Structure formats: C-alpha cells, structure tokens
Image 1 (cartoon, rainbow, N blue to C red):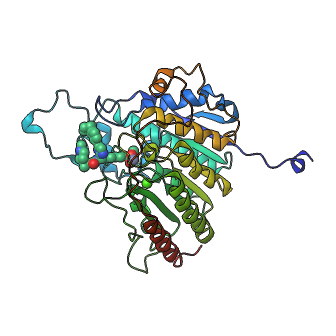
Image 2 (image 1 turned 30 degrees about the horizontal axis):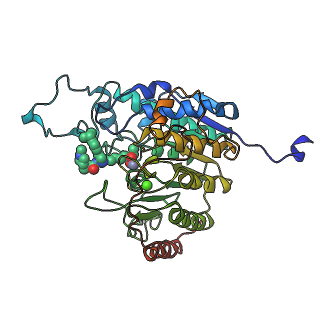
Image 3 (image 1 turned 60 degrees about the vertical axis):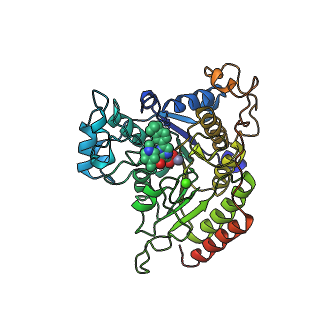
Length: 393
Ligand code: ZLS
Ligand code: CA
Ligand code: ZN
C-alpha cells in the first residue's frame, strides 16, 4: 500500500482574515495591523500558499468570546465608539472602564470587529487541530496574550490564545503553551493559573519597574498552595537586554525539552511574538530571524499538533521576515527557499529600507549590549529543573 511506502505526510493550515488588517490603532501607535498584510504578501510571493490549506477565517461569535471573557466586558466592548473629538487637557486622564480608551488600548473604528476576527482565526486554527485536519495551524493575526477576562491590556482586548486553548482542552488532556514574545504572557498564565492541564512558559524581558507588564519573575510558578492543581505549572524565564540566538537556543531547548519529557503535552500552542527580534521598536533582545525560527523548528520536531500564533512585533518588515521564515519551517521548505527576497513582492520598498538587495534573514538594527551573564542563565535552567520535579503527566 502506498501509505506504507512513504512517511506520513502532514498538513499545514493558514488562517487569516484580510478585513482584520485594515484597522488602525492611530498614527503613532506601535501596533500596526498592516504588518499582517506585509507578512502575507511575502509568504504568498514565495508561493507558500500552494503548500498549505488556506482559510479565510470568520469572526468569532459573542458566545465564543464569552467562553473566556465576561459578558459585562464584551457588552461594553461591543458598544464603545472612538471619541469624536480629541480629548482636551482636563480630560487627559479619564476613568478608564475595563482599561479601554487609554493610549495603550485606544478605541478605534471597528474595534469589536478587529478583536472578533483575531479570535476567529485562532479558534479556526484550534478546531483544525482538534479535528486532526491539520498538524500545524497558523494564525498570525492572533497571539494577543495580555487581554484579561474583563480587561484590556497592552494592545490586547480579546485573548484569542485562551479561547483557542479552551477549544484544544475539549479534545486534548494537556496543552503546553510557549510564549517567545519579548513581553510576559501574563493573560494566558493567569487564565490557566489553577489548572494542571495547561503548562504556560514565557520567555521575556523582565524589569518589574521599567518594562511592561512587570510580572513573570523566575519564582512565579503558579499558586503557592500545593493543593491547587495549578501549582508549579507556570514557568517564567526572565531575561535582560541583548540576549543572543545562541543563549536563547540553549535555554529554550533545555527548558522546553525537559518540560515535554515531564509534562507530556498532547498539543503545543506557540505564541511567536516578533518583538523579541533585534531592531524591534519596543523590544530589547538581539534575536535574529534564525534564532527566533529555531524555537518553531524545535516545537515541530516534537511531532505534536501545533498552533502558531502571532503576537507583538513593531518593526513591520522584520515581523514579515520572521513569520515568513516560520511559515516555511512549518511547511518544511526552509532550506529550499531563496534567501534574496522575491523581486515582485508588492511591498519591496519596505524591505529596501535595509539594503539594496534585502534578504529574508538579514535584519538591520544596532545590536544591543548583552546583559545576560552565563551564570544567570545557568541559575534559570537550575530553577526550572527543580520546579519540574513537582510536575507529572
Ligand atoms: O506583548 O509600558 C506600558 C504602559 C505605560 C507606558 C506607556 N504609556 C503610553 C502607557 C502606560 C505603562 N505599556 C506597554 C505595552 C506593551 C504591550 C506589548 C504587547 C505585546 O507585544 C502583545 C501584542 C507599552 N510599551 C510601549 C508603549 N506601550 C507605547 C509606545 C508608544 C506609544 C505611542 C502610542 C501609545 C502612546 C504613544 C504608545 C505606547
Ligand atoms: Ca514572552
Ligand atoms: Zn510583546
């Protein structure tokens, strides 16, 4: 039989909604939904859509959002409108309801649609994984890890990741959540704080007083009460400016390798925030496209159903590079693609900002001083190893 002759094939699905990308947070706001358009056009220019199942995702319904979010919050989110006139001086610091309307989480035209489309893509991806129609499902429009049950936070209004993981939990006994965004994945950690069915792992820049959101210390590992099943099921990897590919790779492989061994997840959800790349407008790390992509490669090698979410990423041309490279890893064609960017990319001017002959992997930006001493990295590995002694599948 033919299926005996060849290794089992696998399916990658790609979930996006072009309408999501048209929204604007405001001129100066760092979050630019059009980075999704830029990423997609590069992915399509390489012809990668021919190696995936492509879906235009629907918007998530109110009921689907209410799986995680409070109806009070959703009702408010569904009715608030952007202010018709700019706030005047005496109105600079309004009482923010649900943290909506400040400079991080502004109100903008079509906000509810934008949020429900982001969640719709993530949820479609999770459903394809549950039905085993995909082995790897990609939702670059998702990954908004700061949103809380009844609160917007850090550019995130609806936590599409939590909603997608809740869907996975209907079919999967244990889900491993990994977060390589430069910010702490606090919203996802909090949502699954009290369960041993989800282990959350975030790698992030940690400086409680100077870097958002200020949580995610090495010894924040879940409920302190040992009788709470969520105890020890939150892993935090606090890092400093300038971490390199080599250091990150060592930490990631050691930590994720041991977690998979101990926790034995049946599915992995990976938030691929691209603000951990060198040269990011908000980030602080020195990761290259290769080093960032190595995290995706490592997860793929675990041979478990995998969802890839987007997330942060504030230098759009580098976001597009990373998510294109990571799409190629999902498909398995990363060694076969031309490193010189395709001539006919409609957005070539964006990439020309770097050099005359821009490549997929070369990102520009002054490297930041590395403030991660090897000794500290060893301490982190040591702490996580000890923490995992309390974890069993
Ligand atoms: O993880 O640091 C903060 C909070 C503040 C400082 C900034 N001011 C404006 C508000 C109060 C304490 N917020 C962070 C949020 C980072 C969210 C990351 C999301 C994710 O990548 C997932 C998608 C922050 N960092 C930088 C800014 N906000 C920020 C920078 C520049 C601007 C422009 C627009 C708005 C005001 C001026 C803004 C925010
Ligand atoms: Ca993170
Ligand atoms: Zn971020």
